Length: 485
Image (cartoon, rainbow, N blue to C red; front, top):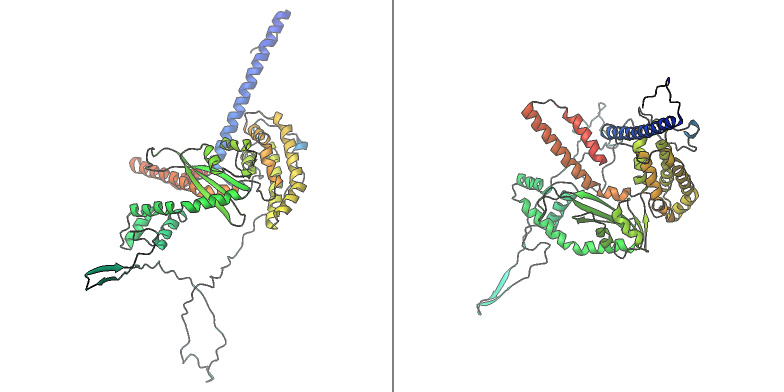
């Protein structure tokens, strides 16, 4: 709105109208300014997610960006009792670890000849010791054929009464696979990430015909045989009072009744004893929370998850106490801290999380019992959490609600009870990371598939259009962006 300062209106009505119009213009300008600030923040976060290092170890180092739209008083920039992080010292010379003693030794003697064992003075040299150097020898897996020989007997005078010994109980009847071979196939597929079609090619090099369809049938039949074991593992999880749960997307090809692009979900549950935890992967076609509710039927205790609404049913169950994930709460602050300098609200929030995790690290390094962890949390962690909650309530009105920082603060306050429930028991972890690590292989498979498709498209572009694209650089960028997703 343009105002002629030389010809201001003299009447009161025109002055009021000018003030109203000016107020409307300022309100509209403030709205556009907030939108611009939010879009700038989203752009900076997108650049950071694509190009910046994915590691969060050096978050508090200075950067070239500052938090958009946030002004912090100088006296509030410093937080007391900063946690000192020890720097990593690189070893100059790697230390070779001794080979396991239980491995069989093949001794090759390298001795002097009889002439060399005679000294120049004419005396025979005396054996005073030896020098041993070891090398690890690899022998490819040996194959053998197991024959089940069953003699047949008959009565010659009667010309009948033929008898033969019964076959022993086999893992897969009418199959050429022994339990050892089936176990190796499953370990290679799920632990070593060797697909069945690659295993088929490995067998071809050994001149053995082992079709992929046959290998697939072995896996499916063994899965059916393991159903009773899975049920017992589920009961083992339900018998304890602490369970972690998470889920991730998976894509199944040639699934009956569904397209190859349809998303499915792999649910993971971790519980049981702390020394030997039980982990169960449960495949489902949807992400509906009723899958977790059905699996955990009869469970009583603490259920630790992220803030996914599919677990809200637990809040209505009087026997279940929902526990939040502090790492999930910390993540948006960490992303903003990478855009900030040494001062800023996100930096202050990260320092609170550093103090909380320093306590957990101290308890873990000193092998604290659950009772000792409960005591140190009540003594130190609760004070830090109370300070952090007060900090969130104070700064909630200082940032726009739709900005990343405002949403992060709202998330912390909205789920405060769940986030602090880990204080109730020393056996509960501060976050759900151990469960997320158990489900990480599925995310890694998705990542490698994305990179494979991306590199394949780049190769085709180079062949057709003669494009000179730095594949390694661009692949590294998409690799980092997929890891975050």
